Image (tube, rainbow, N blue to C red; front, side, top):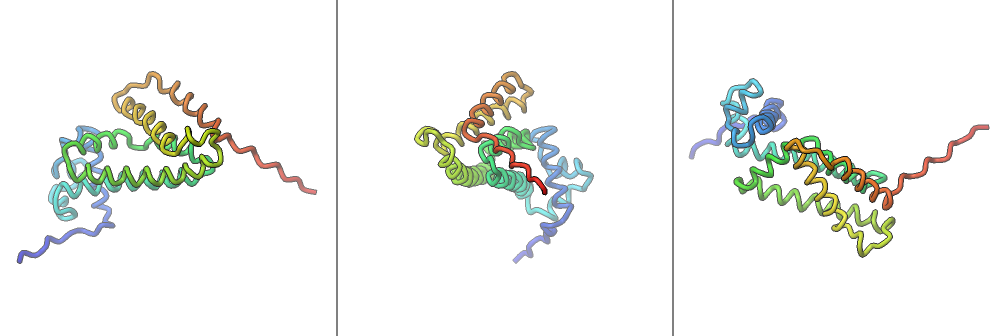
Amino acid sequence: MASKRRMGPESSATRSLLMDGVEAVMLEQGYAALTSRSVAERVGLTHQLVYYYFQTMDELIVATFHRHMDTFMRRLEEALGSERPLHAYWEVSANPPNGAIANEFMAMANHNERIRRDMVEYGERSRQIAVEALSARLQQVSPEPEVFTPYAMLMAINSMALVMNFDSALGISSGHKEMRTLVEWCLRRLEPEAAPAAAQTTA
């Protein structure tokens, strides 16, 4: 039986650098340009190192996707735990740190079954986390619970953020300012800014 190829440790800085290379190539040339050579050369490494840390290029791409989504999930959970989770969820959705990368992974999912399957899994998990958090909030603030349901709010925010993110990736910005104003106007009515605490006086 052939021995398993030695793999570099997951905590290695070089492994992380290779994932940086994947993102850089995707941003500059698109996901179709991803090869072990293009990725490694982009970050100043030899392409043989790809196969020291990953069995295949697909494994490197999947690991990069997981890193990207894990970062998003951390931001999401932090936002939903804030004092104004509706506002925070909108900010996370409408201002992703790597919107162009997300668009590339979305395009890749049409041709890569593993990425598509993992994207669905992350999407369902993030949606469930958001619905549970927003449900608790909407029970407190919603004037019409049968209208402002967690899924309705979630889908409305996601839809508007998705259009804006897609536009931004193309370089379109018209209407974005007005959209943000409308969304924030609606959210302020559901989730008013907390009144400042009364100043403490000293004798």
